[in-house]
Image (cartoon, rainbow, N blue to C red; front, side):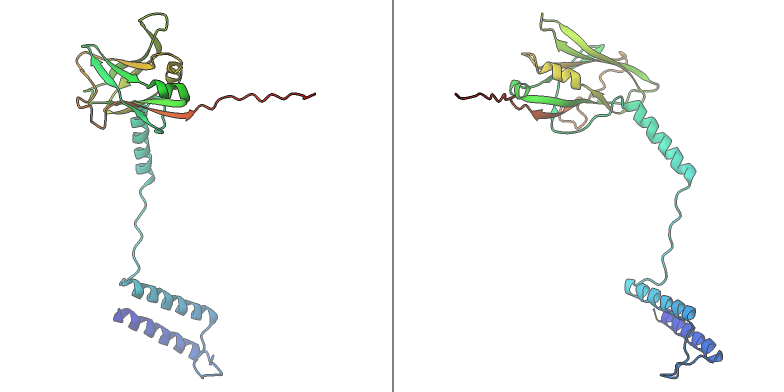
Length: 238
């Protein structure tokens, strides 16, 4: 701006007068020479003014104040509390999803996950995670028991592979490690995994009613293709 340019020019003239009063003159052009420190300050002022002019800023922008340390600590505590209420075992979202079917009773909800025979025969499961989204549980903590059921090879009954007890305090996602259960399924003729959810009767179903909802439960598995084991034989030809 013109006002800033005039200010810088007046500053340079005052610096020249101070140098002239001390008797320091340039022998080549006869203009008063500036001291090294004064010359540096004048060049910095000109450089700053040039930058502000190119950026079309009237003055140097003010830097916002950082948030207080107490506010940051409070926010971190709230985040940790939310994670501890909804997460049991951390999972990784990779390589594919398996959508379940649901059958409900007044006391429990069953989720059935089916894996194809082609995938089960040629795939090695490295990690598998079950994702569950809880709807609004109501006031207070709601106890929920999650059981992983597998077909019994010796009969038509189901066996309990694992059981986990949770206390749901608010709506959100919960992750459970089901890698061991899925790996054991791949060695059976019927690769079915059933998840049984036991909850209070007054809660109803915690799952969305629409199967196309983005909060519908699913299983994420990290897997790799199995490579056949080869044995190299060496012999001596006579």
